[in-house]
Amino acid sequence: MTLLPYFDGERTPNRPTATGSLAGLRSDVSRGQVVRAAFEGVVCGLLDGLDSLAEHTPVDGRLLLTGGGARSAAYRQILADLSGRPVVVPGSSEAVALGAAAQAAAVLARLPPEEVVEAWSVGPTTTVRPNEIDRDDIRHRYNRVRDQ
Image (cartoon, helix red, strand yellow):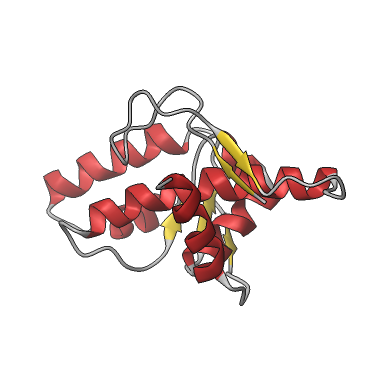
């Protein structure tokens, strides 16, 4: 099952009038499978944006996750699994503001942001490692529904 979460249009790809859809729904689908499809759909959309960014600049390494999704262990794991990258979740509830301040300080000090964050001792982080899954199959199914 694949969820395309374009409930109010989409920016990447640029489809402002797009609508959401659920493909592959059958009578034997469980609630858990619907929830998993929802998480995978949101993550695949996020990865579409990352792929678009990667067309213009090198994108590699770990992913830093903040916001509401960062509180969900399932979302963190699915993001790691589908991206094939470690996902780092800051322990601070003010991670976005702290990240902006660290970036500004890094620019002023002409240092890499990770050096500033380390020097500031911003607190513990959680790192989620990706599992070996068939991420290409999931992305392919999502892309097929997206492009219909």
